[in-house]
Amino acid sequence: MRNLDPTDDLVRGVVSRARTSEGLRLSRLPAAAEGRDPDPQLVLTASMAAGMRVRVDSDTRALELEVEAAGLRYVGGERRRVAFDLFVDDRLFERRVVSEGPTLLVDFGSSPPGVTQEAGPTTRLRFEGLPPGPKRLELWLPQNAAITLKALRIDAEATASPPSPGRRSWLHYGSSISHGKEADGPSDCWPAIVARALDLDLTSLGYSGNCLLEGFVAQALARSDADILTLEIGVNVVSSDAMRERAFIPAVHTFLDIIRDARPDVPILVISPLYAGVLENHPGPARRGARGIEAVSRPAGLAEGALTGASTRHVLEGLVERRRAGGDRRLHYRDGRALLGQADAGLLVDGLHPSDIGQKLIGRRATPIVDRLLSGD
Image (cartoon, rainbow, N blue to C red; front, side):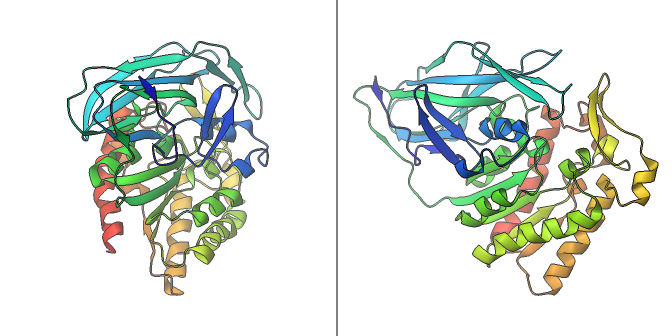
């Protein structure tokens, strides 16, 4: 076997990378942003490989990967399954589920939640029996594990090259609904489903619990050369009770202004909260309880401008309409309930997060919406 250098062309969906003594640490957060947020959960969730994949054109008959895949476990729960999905010429060749590796232990009993890492062995994967001749390999990395890439290998005599350019690029920003930790595998997250269906080069900024309109994320979107941008926003603002309506409206305007100043013509789609379960008509904060996600009863908060899933949709729809009336005709709005509505509430595993089946349903419904955005409709 021979080693391949995991360059930008071979490892896609990554925002920043850092070479350490352990290997190449991958992140979906700009390097300069680390340390600017008071919640370590943002750095944690950005280190998880949602949307990241290795893409290479090769005639190799085997592919090897050495990786530190730090899986996720909540205090009192079991370690989440960690899966790698290998596609050969756009067909799923094998899903490999691994149990070994370090563990990221999250304690929701503290505020912000505490995160500690438990040691574990390096994961060594070998995919054998690949079809002969030239082919496109795409290995999706686990969406619910922090990834440090140690080695990538193909057969000693095999050829390897980055896939030919020309794919349209898509950058998506969102919450845990977009992160998709409840999906059975990384290619089952709804943004991955859309990207594969439309042959898009995806960068997924689905930050579980941390889609809070930070300026440094807006700057990352503004610096990208993506053909389209989509923003699934609002539910984390509600679930964390991070903003009242008075602060939320200018925060969204500022987020969009940062992008528009750099990318005046890029199509942008704002997606309001999908059916928000327990937060549909109740303000946050939301907490994990014995029966799943639970909202604190605060009727007085509604009168003071606290946001709910329903009111956030109303705010976002009006905000986009005003900006379009002001001349931004490449900004669009979509009610998130078109992707997952009240009739689909049975697909929420804890009252808020879609199951694997729910992720696939969202992917099927989102595909024509993103396709129309690409075509300029």
